Length: 131
Image 1: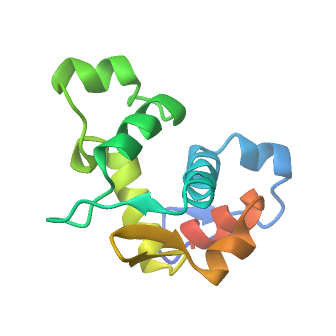
Image 2: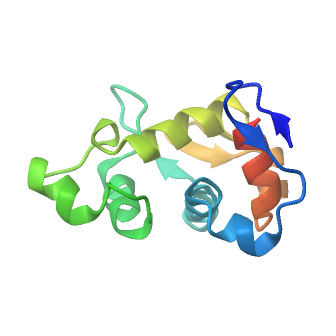
Image 3: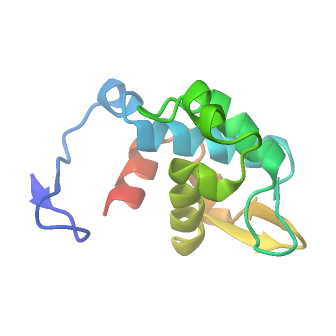
């Protein structure tokens, strides 16, 4: 195990198995978002903030399995969901863009070459997002 560059309190193990990574909300939901972008020709962005369009946020609220962010909890506070209302998606958006796995182009968040190469590889996505 070795410390993450994000925090001295986070340790990463290079010996994780695929089934252990499949249980990671970060890797699982990140991969769902990448597949969504691939299957839809990118994720539409809002014109004002460059955030994911509400349709994607609503999809993510139902598809993501992130403890404490179940749809019934999210909708009990908001009638409609925007990206800032769903922090796990907002953080993934920022991280994927910062790591150049997605990029904004012509009003859409599209996969980069690196993003396409990561598709289907939960371990690589987990490693990239965690380090």
